[in-house]
Length: 258
Ligand SMILES: Nc1ncnc2c1ncn2[C@@H]1O[C@H](COP(=O)(O)OP(=O)(O)OP(=O)(O)O)[C@@H](O)[C@H]1O
Image (cartoon, rainbow, N blue to C red; front, side, top):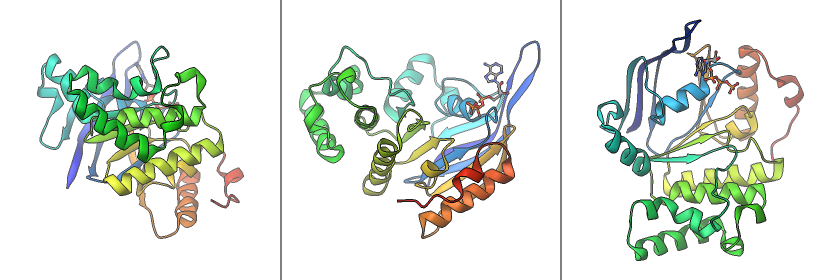
């Protein structure tokens, strides 16, 4: 079942020079899928994420979540839709520094005025699943980058969104913390059938996904599905990246994945 349908979407930035950042892009995201979007710098990944997250509007084409077309919603409905249906995970975590880890996580429910009991139940379940207990009462500047990203993932999950949109979630993490965050995303994807769309430059991060969709100059370039072994999927991702051009694929091709 498709959770998200991107239908013939084009985004043109008008200015001194007209820039067609996304051009007639069509794809679906299935319920429970973990999808990576990859492409060279300037290929339109951020633009696409902004369109899917309803921060920006397509010039033409449609984006449909289940049966909801965000373009048809007014501003109040759109704000509510974003809060309820979408979960965001960013490269720089975006935690509020003055709040504790616990307060950051329940913030979306506080904004939704959910009953305290609901907040506590969901918080407890996430604290156990994401192993957050030891730093629940600390503030963001007192925890590591990996821990901060786990908190951001908990915050994205607490209102049980239809889809999690992750923008380079490991971009600011070292390799150990990256692996921890990717294993966590993989776990919530498998155990809770969470649907995740992740934009990444990192072929190791993409190798945790079920499918990688490659874009070039705002257009569909290729897509590949994971097979049994992550190592062979990783090699196939590198092959497509080398066809796409740019990047440091040569340096990575000898990596053995943990
Ligand atoms: N607000 C804007 N106004 C005009 N052009 C823009 C705007 N935002 C992006 N662009 C252009 O649209 C194209 C796609 O940019 P986008 O940021 O979506 O690429 P990207 O794949 O996310 O790049 P990167 O990997 O470097 O972040 C680029 O040519 C960029 O210069």
